Image (cartoon, rainbow, N blue to C red; front, side, top):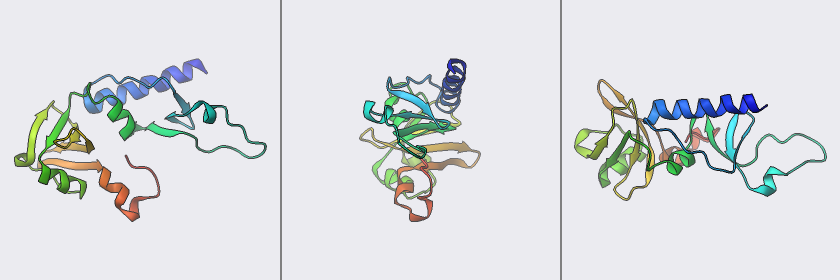
Length: 153
């Protein structure tokens, strides 16, 4: 079991390094549950059901890719990031492409960039293509009723 957890933590670290050029810190109350890294309270950690199976408990912070909580938790370490002006921040959350004139600050070489607004609030993730910076995932997905089947960010 300990070897499995070590391998999973290594996957989290490798993925985060590839995406954002930084080694992440993992919150102390994080555990693996159903192939996801989650954080949970002590009450949820000790939760037992008399019958049936628990399919989910806690906040997912990593499942194949980092979710917003893990990115926010490590935002001081991230080397690949963009800071957008006010207008571009709004357009980014509406799933629009990022143009360089809307970028106030660009750090790192990509391929993925964490996107912040001028108030240092996490907006999402963009990726670099030959044609420019494309919107990969953003907080606006939560407002889109068609994409509510599974957490996207």
